Image (cartoon, rainbow, N blue to C red; front, side, top):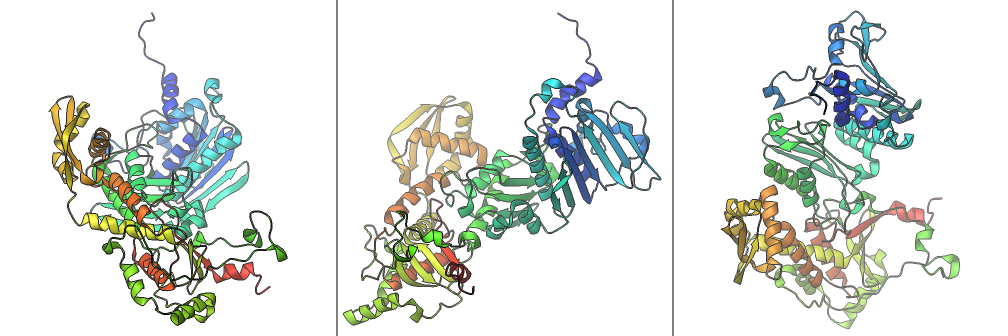
Length: 607
């Protein structure tokens, strides 16, 4: 074996570069963050060949003094921190003093800068010890060429030019989102691809994520002592199949954190459809000493001092933004412009004229007729029954009104979902408001109304506990036993009795009465795991809500159930008062708004 020896400084830097510099996007992130720390008001980025051939980042910050330029390229040299106390409350984006040295070890790097008040600019290259005069008006320019040119094995792992550019563009968008008060420009192969001028946070989010996202998003804004969270949470109906449009910033730093991701996902728990993922841009501000950013060299991961409190705070802030009723949170992008092609028959047989007209179903007398009808959750049905006409003549008048909707007056402005006109194929409710036509999925809407009522009813009383005749015992890990002991009071409030039998086993003696059919062992393990990681505030929410959602689904009015106009109007009023009534329990939209302009365009009015 070889004798132990110190590694050369260049090799040490190249080893460290493996953690900091993964691809051109990693270099761009470090350079742009340095520019932000330098107080820049505008950052200009130029890329060639996806950043592999060349990357130039220029800023108008305070610059670097000539005598410090050579220090800037040394490992562990930084102006950001000088002590452990400062490390524990880092306020800057960079602080490790590794980026420039790592980049210079795997590429040709030239650093040009002019400090505030300096008479001239100076430049220095990687491997040089002395700075030389250069031409630059103000700020700093970092020029990186031939990335991984001296490390062929690393260069083989890079992807195509377009792929590397896409990663660089994503980093650029993240940093542009974090500082809407600054200007940013990105050019690739001589062509400007993105440019943002200083603007408001909402405008910047719209420009980065698209106007469609911004128009339908919900405003998140909450303050609680030293914690503050703000931003935009995407419309649940517009959720995507991927997580590509999820941005979370902690003290201005883009992070990927399981606690924060879980908190947002929990807030969207019963308004998302299937496995879709919401889009959001959220900003959490908190004391620097409350979050540890020195977790990984890439500085994209963080660790919170009190993760449970942060989780609960973020979850409740986002949930509050999503909790508006259908009247409070209309979805402007829910009404796509209609074209004649949208009305073609699926079988291709469009009949005379080539188009099919919407079919309106006449009203039929009858109530909701549900198998399960707890009076507490059917106040709207009771009020509707009181308003129902009696006698053949009155019923005929009501049916005639359904066939002649124009005879009804436009609804008052305090009824956002308008007044019912008719029922379509026993599934949808057609209503008119001042904006135009409203289309409601009656089962989905009624399901949400019942679900929220069930939750409110359950929240007003203690969770009933069901003792088990024969306790369920199972082998447990040490962390599960510790959680059972530490959170015994919380478990009891949730309807559980889980006691340690030894250091490696637990016994479940009681479970919530609503969950007696669940697998006690799996349920206990899930609850203990979430208690240890996220605290007791919302641990039972998912299990409880799944059960209540099933109950509401079975109790809600079914398709082909004929409703009268008063019943439909009552359902619309309940939607306007019920939280999250824009989506059903499974995340499907409950209603759409079709503006008069959409209908006019369909019939080519005004052309």
